Length: 80
Image (cartoon, rainbow, N blue to C red; front, side, top):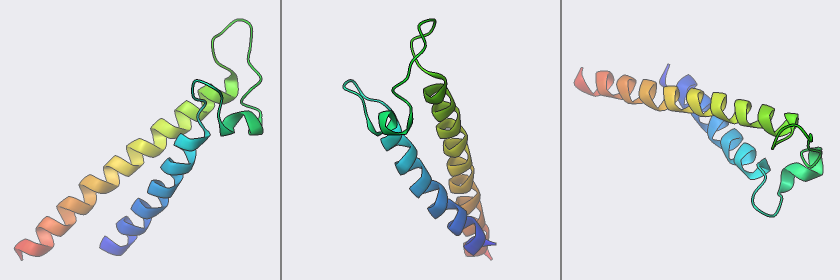
């Protein structure tokens, strides 16, 4: 079980790095290469940027859950 959670943790860590780098900064970012530069006149950010935000938050929640789960698993195995 520990190996599975560790594997998910590594995958989500790498995904978070990639997703954060795709976000647009003050001067634009890598997201503009993948269609993130097209923005709507009605809102401040594009649909692609909003979806990128949602995916990043979901990945962060999964990453956090893996950290907590791995900590609890290691605590129970160290106690026995």
